[in-house]
Image 1 (tube, helix red, strand yellow):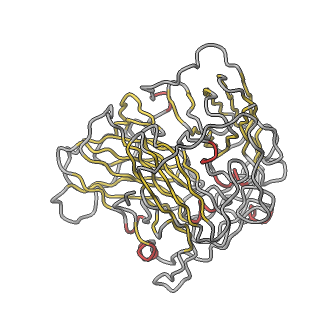
Image 2 (cartoon, rainbow, N blue to C red; image 1 turned 180 degrees about the vertical axis):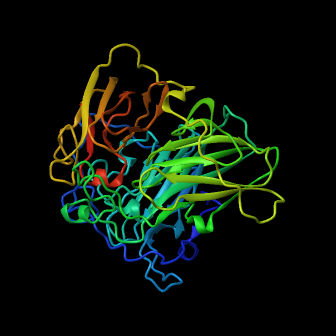
Image 3 (cartoon, one colour; image 1 turned 45 degrees about the horizontal axis):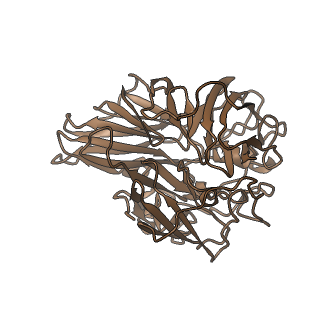
Length: 480
């Protein structure tokens, strides 16, 4: 296990977040959602097709993770009730070589049940970390051992999958290193973007929705909301105390961008340098140049920059919706004096999904699909729920597939907001890209994904906007 150089301690996190600190994040989750960390919870239905077993034997990379409340006062004297893994924001970086076995011992130091999900990794179903779907949640004071093989190589992250715990700070990066990367680089930095909430996360029910930032009418809808975030953070820091990313002139630098937010799409750009996109959701693509990219919660992009423009330069991540301050970092050449970084410029070429060409397309997706699901993403009629084909989880039919099927899911978005849709346990093909999370644009946007049903189990499929998920926008993909 390694800890990222820009991860910060619990005390330091409270100091650098800035004015006001973190206040009163009391445990608030939906009373009816079985992903909640509250209430009576039992494991989900056993898969009808046997899932594969996790790897056995001693792990090559052993990690201990302890989620617990921050429990310290900020400099302003305001109680800080955020929850952190190992006292760090974001959680400690986990890094392993491709093919290694990772063993993670989770010790629950919270007052609530919890789990850990390994976002993007197609591991054994029992290790996926979804309460009531793949495991019983871990009780306060109890432990759970996760074990999985580090494959394929790429940029991933881990996070709590219980209730609204992700929006309390429970997320961290996970990097699986290639033995033979398809792009050359001299150094790398991991950049984790998140939205920072300085008040209690509220479940999207009739009371919580009315207090959300965008809870007022938007096209007659109450469903369109985001929490009132204080600002956006990069590697645990607000823009007022931005992290530095040091480079040496002449280096090729790999930047691993992770959107670990609960409800924010970011537009990312690096001043003075072009981004050569090399990976999407951890999977290698033919390098493509862009001045900026936009990604939703759960997505990741790797980019190579050439350090050929000495100085100090801004790395900017603007929230696409909302008016909160942007996340910001500073690209600093070695030997440069401390000075205000050159700001990024708007405009230029923005990356699109159509630009992405997977180097390793998914095999077995030729011809007509064996199963096709046509799904509508829409708001519920009660003003706060979100539905897939008119059904809200858990009162929603599973999507049944058979082992070996070529599965196609066609989604149409009948709402004004985008939905980052994530499939657990599988990569899928969208156009010529291979991903695990895809943003379906709002206002009748349509997206089609194809995947090979090659990992038996019960797998979650959901919107990765945490509040849409909590309000029911999910299904289970069930092997039969």
